[in-house]
Amino acid sequence: MKLQIEIDGKKHRVEMTQAGERPVWTIDGQRLDADATEVSRGIYSILINGRSFEVRMERWAAELRATSSSREFRIVIPDEREWRRNRGSAVEAEGRQQVLAPMPGKIVRVLVKTGDVVRAGQGLLVVEAMKMQNEIRAPKSGTIDRLAVVEGQTVNAGEMVAIVS
Image 1: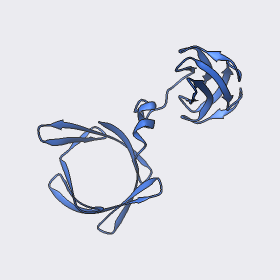
Image 2: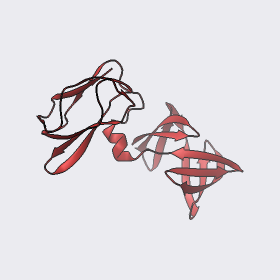
Image 3: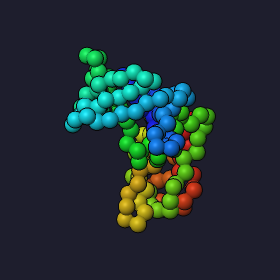
Image 4: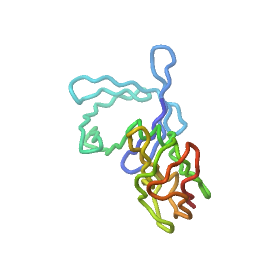
């Protein structure tokens, strides 16, 4: 399992693989000998490289707050489905990117116009397929160079719908 998490505003790549009975953790490319056990609701005993820590975890809106030895850490873990949709990539696409329709359907809403500045992951269009609406998102931050569709138009899977540079 691979995740990108954010701790106090800094992004980290975390990977967990199973080797025997214990998981193996890699954070930002460095292997970490770690184990955690929940000792009571919201309180964990964590062993990292032979050092023991007691950590209290609390959900705070869309993030977690971890407190250990009077230090508090703000942790954001993206929704796994959103992470998969973004292909688990912490790095934005580079260069001029064609945005393709993921499925055949009808464009029901155009959320941007040519020349708009967009963020990576921002919604560009809404396509309806089999009575379900799906948002097509920007693969990178940049400017909308071209919109190749209009509301009401039908598209095929893989058809270019916009260009972001």
